Figure 1 (cartoon, rainbow, N blue to C red):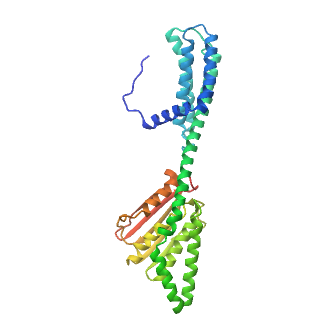
Figure 2: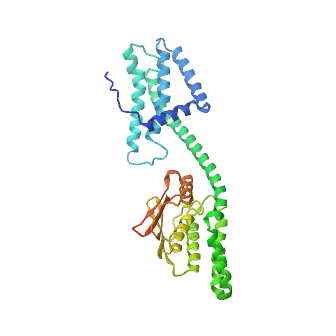
Figure 3: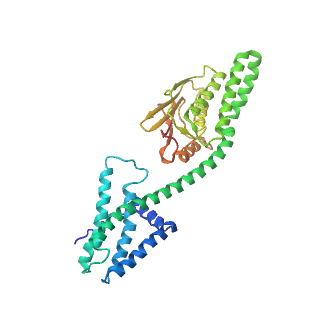
Length: 356
């Protein structure tokens, strides 16, 4: 029998699966039940077999099953992989490897070393062992995967809770520009004497915006419609101050896709669009667009004014990335850059089904 030894480096993903599988098997909640099965099985193998290799064969069969079965299933069927056209082939591969491994150790290996028949290497026992490999490998793999998934989600929830506490302060300290608020209040005071209707409109819009923000700082996530409402309210407030500075074009589906996002995650982008666009004397059109592409929701915000890169000392863009990552994991993305020579384009992509 010729065995070819590959000289290629081990796949890091496979190494990670093997390490985490062994770590999961050594956890007391699994190690104790496994020992309660392996030890009696080995004792029975020794009691009903006369060959001196009976116990080593039993230990080899049990050890190979524990290492290969759950590791192989996890490699072929990771939890984050959807069912596709190759699922049936992967099931057949798992079944073939399991049967080959059990029969190789239970029949081929004893023949090679000249061992006699034992309790576990008899035909009925081998059939049971193959079935146990298939079912037991799947069960252990799912149990380990679910435990790891639960651990990751608990860590993410804790991080979200910490981020929510930080967002409560950040919402009033940096998400709403104090200078903009002060200037708006001063303008409202002047409008109260000069134009009561304009002053009333400004007060209503400012009140609506603050009410929405106070709702957001108490939640971990909220509907995308709230984000759009808050961004458009911010644009409207700036337009009251200078209606000719810019125009707003909303290109959003009706109804909006049902997806939850971190509260006020788009507000720093909307404020940047104002600060580096109309307020920096770049007149033009501000575009807020929402599109659905398969299972993803794409939110785009573009404004006049060339993109000059992240501002030194600014943390708004970094916070947007961090909050998206905490909420959606690897299922979201955020990019911002130049659009042509005189515009800035920001894109946020989130999963359609909501938070991970």
